[in-house]
Length: 91
Image 1 (cartoon, helix red, strand yellow):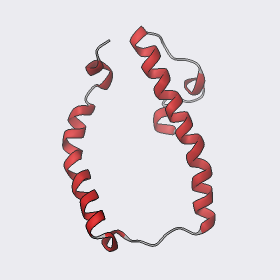
Image 2: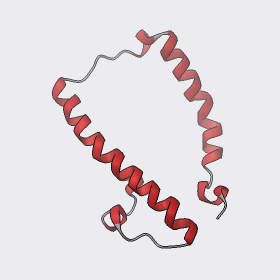
Image 3: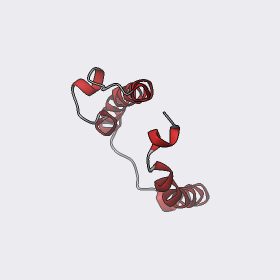
Image 4: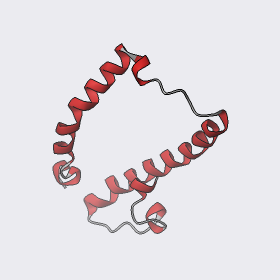
């Protein structure tokens, strides 16, 4: 399977969003006070970290399943795909 088929229209989306991302990052580095909104309480920071770790692990697991099974034209029905229709979005 060609990489272009697996990526789909992601390259077009990236061409549109990349300039905004680059400008935003440059402005954030040059003028960090413009983007300062304070921070969440410690409790929310801890809860966020606790939810982030399994979310990233499930996302990586889903990506590995896609990269290994889709080129073989296999339907993915195990792992996170057995529980959720779109684990990339959910995680």
